[in-house]
Length: 244
Image 1: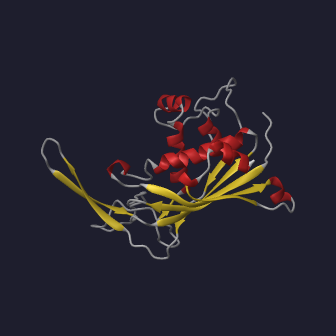
Image 2: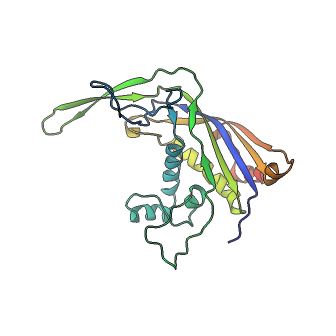
Image 3: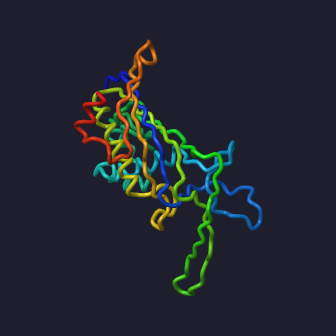
């Protein structure tokens, strides 16, 4: 396989929390009586943020489950990500080496196409909320109360993703990245999603193309499109024609 860097696509915009969001942080150093189920925070500002690993991991999982081969590999790997190196999710998000690599390994090799940055809130001060919950013992009916810290509904975070083009099929795979974002909007981010947490929406989206010459000569970056939301994006064929 011959690959050569052709361009980077920068995908930027805003993540808006439609419901409370909980992405857990460390509970080390919490005082007695303090809240255990805390959200992850930026140590510099003490404000909640969305780790790039959380965003990328969730989009990958949802896209893997939409393809037969990769979803079957998840089952074979006992819940671990697909490692085949050939399916679309592996080509976009990357694949780690198999546990038992052999000389006959025919996995497709190549660089990971996608980088997902940490997403930081757009505000300088943010008050989180506490969500009180109970779990009930089915036999004794004993309640086990707990409190969850959440980023409140309406909070916004700036996101940035970089998708690299090395070969022709990467252009169509870029559209599959958009599909994974759509899947995430109808799923959830973070914990307790089946109890109503973590509904998000991507807004104020714009796409920039930086060809190889942008980094090596005086070539300019190209603004591809601006969209208010994912539903405003054109159909695949039209969008593919724009980005090539």
